[in-house]
Amino acid sequence: MPEAKSERGERASARAGAGAQGSAPRTADTDIAHAEGWATAERLGIHRLAIPTPFAVGRVNVLLIDDEPLTLVDTGPNSGTSLNALERGLAALGRRIEDIELVLVTHQHIDHTGLVRIVAERSGAEVAALDATAPFIERYREEAEAEDAFAHAMMLRHGIPSDVATALQSVSRSFRGWGASGPVHRVLRDGDIVELTQRRLRVLHRPGHSLSDTVFLDEQRGVAILGDHLLAHISSNPLLARPREGERERPRVLLRYLESLSRTRELDFALGLPGHGETIADHRALIDERFALHRRRGEKIRRLIAQQPRTAYEIAQELWGNVAVTQAYLTLSEVLGHLDLLLAEGRAREIEADGVVRFEAAET
Ligand SMILES: [Zn+2]
Image 1: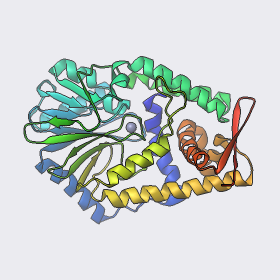
Image 2: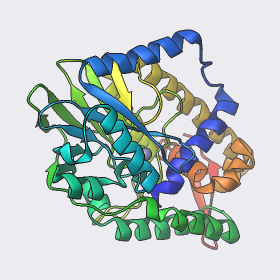
Image 3: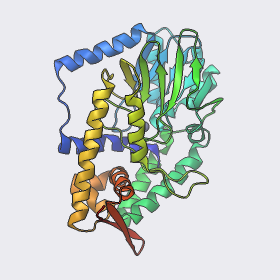
């Protein structure tokens, strides 16, 4: 599944979610708090460059950490427009791409990684990424192909009409140029420390939204760089992921995401810097909202399959109407994430006929 589609989907699902849940109204107070959040980051030497993307999620927050080595967190997607914006943003801070010495990557999605190669080639910067992220950067084309094939098979298996599945596949292909492969010079592991002269960043693997989500935590200053693991304005979707090498079952992404959120909830930090949108002041309250949303959604899905057996696609249509067609893969990811949980709890069963799976309620 190319990340292009997934990022476009994040927005759709947020919209869908907002219909069901209602999103927090934005008030003057929250605007002030967010402005203060980025101002605080600046004082700590972390500058936000909001780089445009072609995806519905909007701009991506690329961060410049004014330290030694001079560090860029994520790069933006692979496009001339994004590169220009990155150059202008750096110039406003008195820097050039050639000055970058280290690139850290928060996760595998192309709105975050697309310019890695160009930045690395022009600057000679070291690129550091989690072991789970590295293959998606180093072998982008192959990974994107494999994700697409997996997505197509999953869509058909879960009741998405083949014309819709084929149309989505070509949309996905058309976005592939916003990604590119690039080098990874240093492979990070969960728990590692990235040492800069003035700060230490703890590397924390938080799979769920993607399998490679990484949080960089500055314990001393109470700042967490979150990527798309936790966003203030929309719920990050756990996207379906294909089984990794040597594994037969696909990962239960929602389960992993909820576990990751629990672990982040335990961390102490006062300022969260996400990959899109505004800063996060109270991550525990936000995570509790996300838990509540997923509980409600899970119960709703259980009620739908208690009425009659349904495919995941039919459930998505019940929940989100036409968004389930235009954002079929994304909403499918969301529904299957919940069905994984219900299956694990013994509250749902799979019935397969002619290669299509339906789900029915089971008593525990
Ligand atoms: Zn993402």
